[in-house]
Length: 472
Image (cartoon, rainbow, N blue to C red):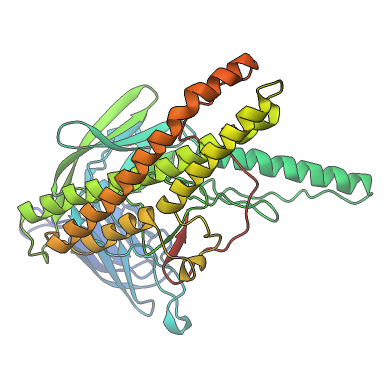
């Protein structure tokens, strides 16, 4: 490798090649500009790192092919490798390497301080589907990227993101989402029933092992949940990473909801200092997370604050509308259930009153949400309703970092007033519930209690996808 170090301005030199094979000669060596003694070396066959000023080296190759590294550069916290014949490679975010110490890997858990995050969307992700068929690298994830160390795998881990006042904005866990867990149980039961049928028919059962991808993937006739669950926090032994998209929680949503040019994503946090908190095995670890304004943005801090507050109002109004739909469907399902179960002299009167209430609620529901939508293309034929219009306004207001326009406020106030009238009508319609519940009590049946809980119905067919429509 022929790597040497001098501490006396070149009067004497000491070899620093421990760990690098003797068959690899060095082409470049660089010192990290932020951590003294953190060295990177490019050789004929890969990249190496030293945490102790060259006293020892270890491979940093990861998924880099065996390729000559002709040059290395550190640019804004990333390590860029110039290869001979394999293009440029970038190791994103050196913050964990810069903070790594021997005592960290001997600890049970450790949370690294994230590097500053630009409040900008760079479209993270990517893969090998580049134009022309040429492979391309995967871009780093957008948002605040958190690194943490775990000595033991499969522990229950949570990550909390807190605002400047210590209030939790978002919380994520390594536990499987309850809806995904239910789908997994359903998938297992379907597979077991199918295998039983195969055995009875004298056919070998299906013993293929299907790997779980983030807990959401199913196979064959086991449909995935329509709503993607929140991202799970990794909990493997060693270094883990998690990316927060810098957003507040999504608006309320209901199953199979179809929107056209509208979304439910919460607003992006403002520039400032936040806190990330790692909770594992009864202990908490905290680090600051700094979010800075996109340097290309000309909007003032006051403009961004006004935009953020307005987006929160739109978000809350969208939730109000969707919660009303869930409440209406919940009550209608209970009305249908009790109408089937009630007997005695009051059964006919109850069924009539329940039908009248259900019809009123259906009319209100139809004003809030386009109930005719069954697929992502249906909004082409059926006009969107209040919840979709309000949600679409968030895309207009949040489409760029700027002060909201007066026209957006006018539209929001008009749509909010229309929704408030429908919510008032819903509350008025539900005033008959005490009388209906009295009849149910006499029949020894449970009362009807309005709730936003979704009562599962038979699945409907539909397709995801095109021309701006989104299905949740």
